[in-house]
Length: 265
Ligand code: ATR
Image (cartoon, rainbow, N blue to C red; front, side, top):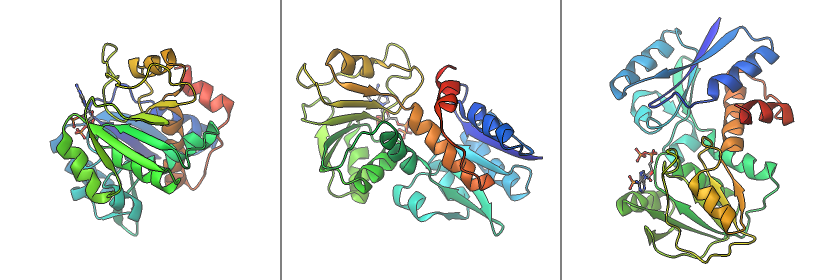
């Protein structure tokens, strides 16, 4: 039996086992998918276990998407570009780090039929997943991307990979068609982000990468301003679909039943 893992810290909130085990069963695959809380010093052990075929593959989540890079053999070109790995798999006896977040984000916008081409986007945060979102936005042909992070140096680092980024100070006003929260602010129910923009945001999009809670204060704020709001659940489902394809060679269908299974958790 093959066995897969999602590792992170914290990991309790992860819905990866639920969706992967659902698709494993649906496709009659002899495998199991579990979640495991790891500390940083246990990452090399995980890689060893994959090397010895004790673990068949793994998803990597916060805060290890960058940490894992130095421990594995190769990166896919995309993972290398965004310097972020969320899927480990074996090929020709090498442990490869892939990234399915970039495409997952793009697919989530396609799913809701939101055309972001030509739009002016403001990104909040400069953490592990932010480069994936920027890469995805550039590939979809957005017009401008501004980035705002509490620690400005981290935005400066990201700009080295994406030179056209416009860095703005945390809390400063900015104009946008779509605003995307990539910070971890919102995971806790009382977390709040001050958004310095006009009160009426009709026609704009507020997108939060967070999917649990379903409506962060950031999204509630968007709702109060008459914006379209979207949480990270579709991005989550689509990144999982692509990881599943890498490991099992099957791209499961994402239909209403799949989405309900995950959103009604
Ligand atoms: P990492 O910082 O290790 O990459 P992450 O979870 O991927 O971790 O990213 C956390 C993001 O949320 C960062 O953009 C972080 O801002 P800093 O770079 O300034 O730390 C942001 N974040 C977390 N807590 C925050 C807070 N209280 N206020 C503002 N931003 C916060």
